[in-house]
Image (cartoon, rainbow, N blue to C red):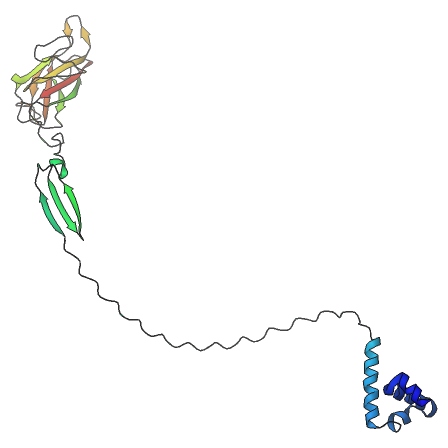
Length: 268
């Protein structure tokens, strides 16, 4: 009968059954201390743990623990060894000195015949051509022969000007020589002249002549202008009109007198 029971429950089951029976009959103390040998005690513990795992259930998840404190900063690492010095570069080639060749004026192949210089640097030739001749029409230069310059003049005064009044004309481009009174022609308002064929708004002059055109004169009466053109003079009040300009003198001035006009001079 015992053999049949062992085949059904196994040795471990038999041991547990025996222990349970002993505990029931003689008390747990005897079974724990005197009823089993060392091998049987180990088997009992192993069987008990295995059976406990089968029937154990997982409890609820615990609360998250507090974050731990930061660890101490690690020590600074040692500086690495200094690298080797690089090789010195090769010395560059000496540059080629620039060369220049004159371009003779009139050669159509370069600079359109104006002439200049061709210079070469590092094998790349470049032509530098002469510029065009500058215009003589600049301040401080001399008016060329046949060229005409123009301007305007204005004068005013009263009966108190017993010595007369003066209108100023100036030449931005200087004339070649002083202009004498014989070469100054005054064309009164409403009159014409065979040599000075222009007018106040479009003054003209033949070579070597200074033509003065009156365009405004107030007051005027039936008997004529209220002033008389007394002729040109130098800027100092005496002599001829200079190369840079001069004065036009008016006399017999009446109150409220004002006159104006244009001028032209052509160089000879």
